[in-house]
Length: 456
Image (cartoon, rainbow, N blue to C red; front, top):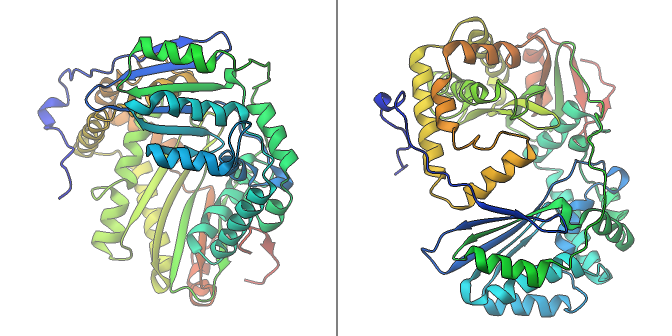
């Protein structure tokens, strides 16, 4: 049974005491930012290293970060790949590596050995195992070939290209050719440029004290050398919509249409509209009491599920609605999405809707706080997004203070239907005649997002 995360309406205006203690935080001389969240209930420690960087174009080597993350376990200065895996298996350590983050979870008794392995990977990775590179790229290329037939993956890739364009980091996706272009030297260059201490946060969460963290930092991290770098965001051009358009990728064997309705938006977590945007999106398309769900599933039975995302990003965000419907109701589903968007923009939301969503959001937030990892995540999020300290400590108060007018401002700014994209991955033969009735310009694309010359 699903856990009830709502709170009584009478508590919405009360002062709910949120106990989010600031993590122990200090800065090493090499620029590495260290966080500690103590939790001594179990003899476990989780150590995470998270990089802070501006997204960059991978171009003809798209997918290099994915390859890089897997190659971090391919061998170091002091251990071969096999030796690393043997040590990790023996101690029962959970190790996850990606370009953005390296995380290790360990029993307290293996803490010193675990962090030594983590730092060995972080500072001494050799990137010289050509055999492993070949194995990794082979696996990724196999996945690419499989995903070329997956409508969900096609939708994701084409959506990103429509929203951001091929010359933006968010618009890229790997292909067999770009993976083939990646070499050992490329990985070494990336490692040298980005894996420096003054780009990273390291967080210790669990059965560990401040004294122990300082000891580990002194013994394992102090020798990691700081380097200068430029981390200035360059505003890369992204396509802007001057009208609403339909984009169709024809997949003849599909019996359902995968639909994505949306556009790019400029919304940051530091913006005044961010907190109201959480509530506005929740009312529109988050959960079983959202307007989109009640319309397309409960009332019309077009779909099993529909949801919306209003995503804030320090570079550029997006607003998207996702659903899957039967081919024969594709047009009607789109029309009802447009109806709900027009309705929420042109008519004020009700106070009842606002309070219901406040309950849900506050309840989920309080539930999230049971996870110690969230505390460090909140702190790092505040730092990365230039949020005031205590932003999440005051989150409940901020949600409580949102008014109907605040939510309506968000709806009027981000939920309009005059500009954007209606992307449909489906069987065009069965849907095209009805889609024409919508009256929007129609464009056909291939599975990689390239425009096709085709009569409508």
